[in-house]
Length: 235
Image (cartoon, rainbow, N blue to C red):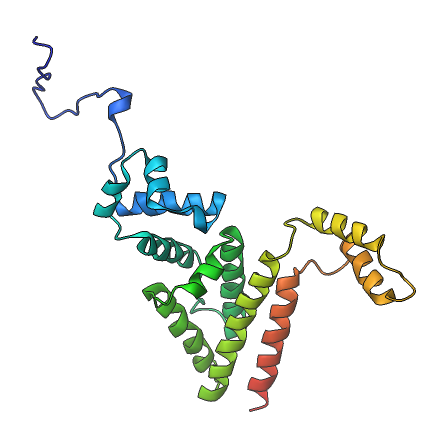
């Protein structure tokens, strides 16, 4: 056989190509998934066309067949994160439904630490975001909340999710053990006679949890939902 000739396949069976030739074709989904991994590992600012090209083993210019620009990529990976959030379940009571979707939102934003800020930065109203904006007030309205109370309740739940998440992610620690170490170091510099309750609070961070197992996020979320329930019952 001439060196440049290709083998002839006599039937419809796939040719058994060498491993190096079986490359997953480039697609929008593959580009966005690579960008998501890069953002999770190194931060959203690390996502660039050049860096993505390196990650995927292609020239950066070839990415433009699948994404428009860097903002399109950022918008696309935020969209992926928003799809991870559970919508309020139609077959649950309003409180359980909103509680679960709030927990799911918080967990998604903690998994992808850049996503909450990026969602607020980009002005795009995505279809997945519109579903949240529709299902949350629908859940409340169908549970008997008035239009006015639904308006305030929606903002209260959403602002709590966003505010707590941004506060948590801004902290200089990621684990309870790191927090306990920071609290222990701080205690050495705080005069207990002047700031007894600050010291008490710091020591609580160092002690094993004796609560009911709820996270700090859940504790505050339940306060919000309890308050909304009281307002609904008092109408």
